[in-house]
Image (cartoon, rainbow, N blue to C red; front, side, top):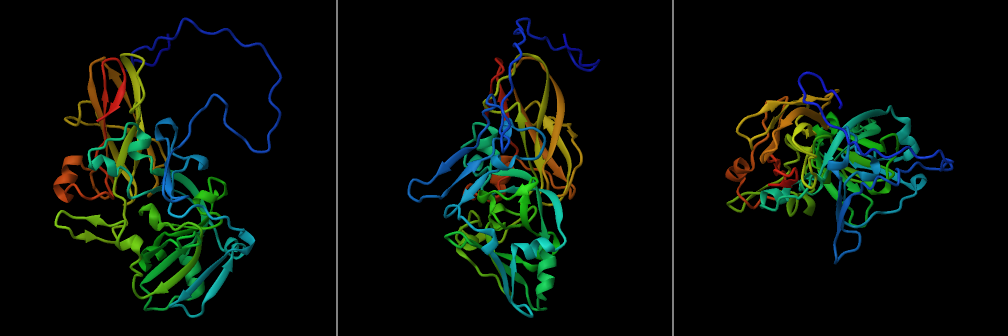
Length: 389
């Protein structure tokens, strides 16, 4: 028996423990580390059947620990495939409303003062199916268009100041070097506040799928605006009104009108353990754990319900709790073996409380597919199996 302290019931251990394996020669050293062959964690991918290179893959949140997403498991969203870019030949051009157009090599950018920060990136379509009533069967399919990494690069403000932006500049149009020349208009205020030009992720150079050799990172804002394979910044007085900010990535209202430039990702959370597709071993002690995040700043509190939302208990947040970064929450639970609904909700430092699906439907109607952050509930059956609600 494993003692868990006075506040927890004991957890029984298996009596049929395997015998110790005989010593054997270890594996040879490898040039790049890989996971154990016993670990099968991988992303779920969906690629267009009509266009090569167009599609997305999801982070398997239910299989991860801590808060940092391994680079190889970061979610992906591609509109025109992944370009192959030689970093020595790559340039970042800044032009428009600047005193003088400039062109930086990657080596030039690395010579600027660097910063390293953890931040989440979330696709604004994350959880969109939940609003439409298509509940994701597991945490990957419900919230897997979210990842949290440690990013290294240079402040965008530092580079813009070097280009001497003119006083009448209000926007920065960022353009990628992919085949579709993905472009988004970024307000100058955000560009000068906390935006980054990143060239490293989790201690190594960006992966090609994450924008190698350079991407824009807009902490707390929808992922589509954090342009990958960044090669051009056009400083302007007005937004470009590209198709990715007018025909797409807008919030449709019941009257047919749409809100554009709704960049900020609001407070959200999801329980990852136990969650859909998993099964509890039996009644007794279980730790409930998950992730919470907010594009408004720091997560202030996470509450967990064990009765479908009628009552809430405060969870513990694993520190450090940082702005616009995911945080892991935990709470002990003595399950009585009866069917129940578990859920979590995030409250950020602005006082914003993560809403329910019904509250979002009442406010926005059923047609919006972006910026959904409704409370996610999981159903725990009497046999311990967990399914989506």
